[in-house]
Structures are given as structure tokens and as C-alpha cells.
Image 1 (tube, rainbow, N blue to C red):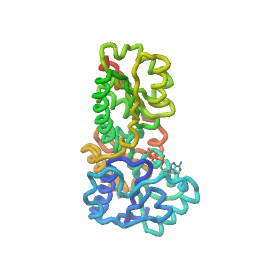
Image 2: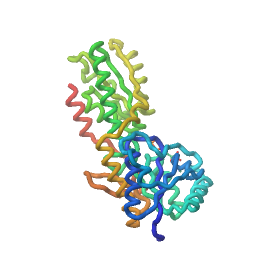
Image 3: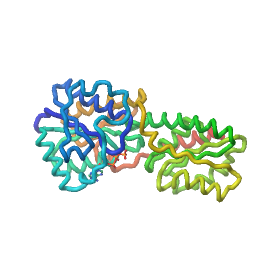
Length: 326
Ligand code: ATP
């Protein structure tokens, strides 16, 4: 295997707070180890169109506290085609980039895996998504910040919910994963979370009503994971109006506010550790792995496992929420 002299970094898919801390970590760890670093703009799109700039240590100064990604991000359909990936490979050769660190969600890692199955090229991935839906890592970069943003919002909704004695369905992101909804519900003291992982097994609304929620309370808050499987918060509000007309129901859809904001200490530290570990892994000759965190230890997870496996919800968390919301 040829020695790595230059590492390229890109962020792809949905942006997540802490991506900048990861870019900084990869850049600084590379330079610390005597390597050159190139920032690739707009994810895989920038690889195809050659939007690339060399990064020096000062290019990543003063970004650890910023949300979003200074490298920008994009969804790139061209990279899904063999021609697009060939063009990306040509750009990597032209720019003399010997290895890549890609930061993004499940789709980003799938793209990296596809690319490495066609080209003999070292790539290490970092899990960057607010959804926390990637197998092999306890946490993804951005999840903790998004969870705290949700708490801020739910606390505010609670003030109005209790003043008016209303039932609120608050929709949070998660793209078919209930981590934000479930942990957001526990942390905000909500009555329940409606999550896709158990949507097909139980009628969560009927269960909620049967458990007698709101009997002794003057307001109720239910977090709903945005997903085609759950149908989202509007679907549940409609159902309550039709099936349990006694309730005064409102819906709040938090949407993109959940993606923004300065990363929490946890996300900054996670991104810094994973970014540094990605460079170490490449220098150790590792490739086609995602760096993750497991019981506070950094682990290397093969792309195949990270992509293929679904990350399960811990049933103990459901129990905690049910027990504490009486
Ligand atoms: P998030 O979880 O925040 O949505 P993500 O990384 O999963 O982030 P996607 O839009 O699913 O976001 O994927 C990002 C990019 O990865 C896509 O726009 C595409 O360029 C690339 N990609 C995804 N799947 C594939 C694939 N099967 N083959 C090649 N490239 C892919």
C-alpha cells in the first residue's frame, strides 16, 4: 500500500452540529502527523466538480463552536452512478489525495462503501447525523446537540400546554429512528414517545389513552418521531380529534431548528476524538471502517456492519419512560 501523504475531508448528507469540530480534528491531526489536508466542498458533489482547497491549521481556527459545516454539504445523485464515481476518482488522482475521511450519515457511508468496492482507495468514515441511527456507535456527532435543542423547545411548549390544559404532539426528526423522540421524552418529562421501532407492533395512541394519561395532569406532551411508519404528529392529532374528541389538541413540528446551533461539549469532544482517531486509523493502514464510540472507547466498525445493521432502541428506555410518566 502506498504511503499516505494527503488526506481529503468532506461532509455529506444532512448537516449536524459538531461536523466543524470533526473537520478541525482531522485537519489538525493530519498536519500534526506531517500530512497535507484538502477540504472538499459540498460532499461527493465537490469530488466530482473538483471544488477542493488545501487546508492549513488556521483554516480551521475558530470553528469548533460553530454549527453546520464550513465545507458545506449536499445530496449528490451523480455519485450514485458509476460515471459519477469514476469522475470522483479522477479528481482524487488529479488532486493527489491518497485517502479520504467522510463525515455523514448512513447514505454517506453507503456511498463510501460503494466507491471502495470499485476503487482501491482508503476511506475512513465518521458518523455525523443528528438521528443517532448508525449501528456500531453509541452516539453520532450532532445527536447530543439536537437532543438539547429539543429539550429547550419542549420546556417552552410545556409552559403554554399547562396554562391552556392542552395535549401537544411535538414532532422531532429521526428519519425512521426513535432515539431523539424517546430520549427527548425522558429528558423533558413528556408523557410518551411515539417511535417507528414499535409502531407496527402496538397502537401507541390507544396504549397511551388506556394508561390513563392526563388523568391527574393538566397538560400532556407526546413526542412523535417524524417517519412514514408513525405518520408523524399531524396523523396522531387527527386521530385524537376523531377517536377521543374530548381533548384540546395542538401540534408543533420542530423541523430544521433541530439541526442548528453551537455543538454541546459532548459533541465537540466526540467529534475531536473521532476525527483524531480517523487519521490514526488511516496511518495504521485501516480502511473501509467507520470510527465510533462504544462504552466511551473509540472503535473501528467495518462499513458493511455499520450500514447493514439496524441500531436497536434499548427497551429499558421505554420502560423508564412508561414508569416515570404516571
Ligand atoms: P442524514 O442521515 O443526515 O440524512 P446521509 O449521509 O444518510 O445523512 P443521504 O442523503 O442519504 O444522507 O446520503 C448522502 C449522499 O451519499 C447522497 O447524496 C449520495 O451522494 C451518497 N450516497 C448515498 N447512497 C449511495 C449509494 N447507494 N451509492 C452511492 N452514493 C450514495
